[in-house]
Length: 58
Image 1 (spheres, rainbow, N blue to C red):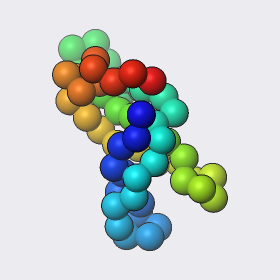
Image 2: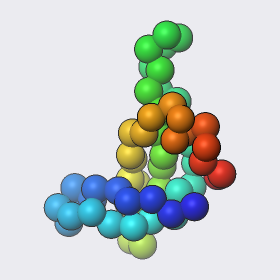
Image 3: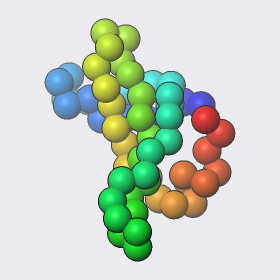
């Protein structure tokens, strides 16, 4: 699955393949995110809604 991430180093939005889904935070205060890698190996993170997180096929 592809998603749009903001690349801080390049200061622009990039398309990347989502590699994993992650949940951050304590119970009751969860934040949902997608993780990806750039072509040169840097990590990208995008926080998403719970609905988008649940619908993603990763």
